[in-house]
Image (cartoon, rainbow, N blue to C red; front, top):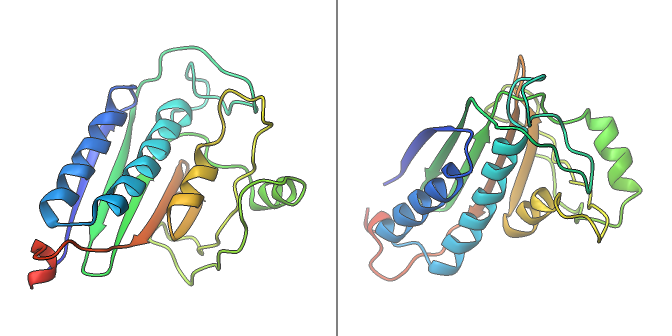
Length: 191
């Protein structure tokens, strides 16, 4: 058996723990190992926080890309989408917003090469549901003194495969998956 769900959430801080609790409840009910559930819930929280902070229309207060160590003020509005797929082997989570998207691949690669940040040993996959070719990117690590900016690196550490991309048109998509471990007698493993 497999299942999926999708949430359309307002870009408000309160939506982050809501999405996290929804995922944890789903995984608990399905019988996923608690350590795997925790890793995925933290990664989801980081992706949602990024969508809340940066995922709106350009020119909307609080939605400009924030430089490392910087912080914009303003009240975010709009929506973002969280979709989770669970099957017998893995969980895939996707968070999509309507913001300015991620910088170009070239800018990300250049920054990643000059940074001692996140690991870059992940292999690109052949295709991705957003319609663009899937290429794994490495998030750049912010300076140690930065107050924010570590979320994408944390997602890369907690998930097995990660993709940072831009939707056709506009908006960022963060998708990640992790191989699942199950508790004995788990509901999804019964089928």
